[in-house]
Amino acid sequence: MNVKRITKYLDPFVLCLLMVIALAFLFPNGAETFCLAELTSVGISGIFFLYGLKLSIAEVTNGLKNYPLHILVQLSTFVLFPAIIWILKPVLSLWIGDTFWMGLFYLSALPSSVSSSVIMVSLAKGNVPSAIFNASISGIIGVFATPLWMGLVMYQQENVSLQGIFLKLTLQILVPLVIGLSLNKKYGTWAQQKKRFITLYDKTIIVLIVYSSFCKSILTDVFLGISLLQILYLGIVIVALFWIMMGMIYSFARLLRLNLADQITAMFCGSKKSLIHGSAILKILFVNNPNASLFLLPVMLYHTIQLMILAVIANRLGNR
Picture (tube, helix red, strand yellow):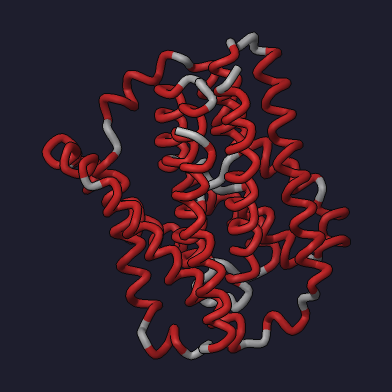
């Protein structure tokens, strides 16, 4: 599998996201017309039900042995990345504004992506079983860790009920996930066979969430205060953060004396963030917040940038 095949597979999705953003500016009432709020709420539950259905408990159990690598990946994902954004808040807020800083912090608190992490690690000849383990576990941890981090920030700025958020997360995400896991033994093989359909379903729901979020922001004139220069600065910050994370994870992996295959897995899994989880959890955390699309924008930018950079790196490492 080469870079061209990966980018060919991913480009239509990125293109669809750009198209629905443009569509939201042209037809901002579309989300209300087609009742997308209700449709995407049900769709989110479906995403996590299918995620649980695909997740092999046997694979997760077998992957527990390489614990130094797992600890490094999970701490990088849920502690190191948020800590960097938190520490740099005075500088970042001054440069890109408080709203985009909140979006960056939301990005930093998200779990690692699953499918793209495994594909990239495989292409780079890294430790694929450990990549599967870490990406899968990260998705489960993120259901709890992401709202906890966001609750810490939102509690300082808004009157937010963490109890209400966790109730919604439990009903919309955790319960479907557990039901899916419980049915994995019986229908897990079927879910693996239908991976393409499940991926298409996941991406369709994400596209609808993005469209709905941007419609709400446009109707409330959120973008009137945002300049193109701010978005450019945001893109520069995201690229810089990606390389900072890659460099720090590599340094820690060397200190732990991990072999090259484990170093690759640590960098690729620890630096990546999931757009699927980002879109789904955002709809629950910021359900009535008109700035939701602005919080989602850093996640979308990071998703695109990480794939472009890691595809090149993975190809070079794979040819070593």
